[in-house]
Image (cartoon, rainbow, N blue to C red; front, top):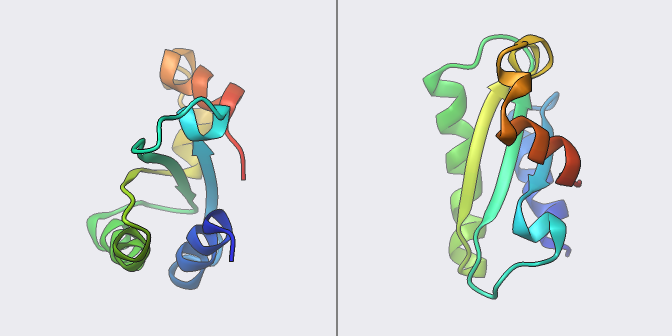
Length: 101
């Protein structure tokens, strides 16, 4: 099975309405073999510690099975779509330009 599909499937099992995006060097296809996988995970409603923890735990087995590292960034959809200051950041622009999934 494709690793990106497995990532999304694992996250959707704990957060069915999550949106999952791969960004960074893996999305741009200019990565090194040992590069991590940068994930942006957007959730409806309030994002709190228990919800983040569930997602992180859901990905541990994949990290172990494939010997890979995930850099997880978890935000609410509302924050991502409506925070005007954040939308002007280089990070936001890079993710908008490069993300896939």
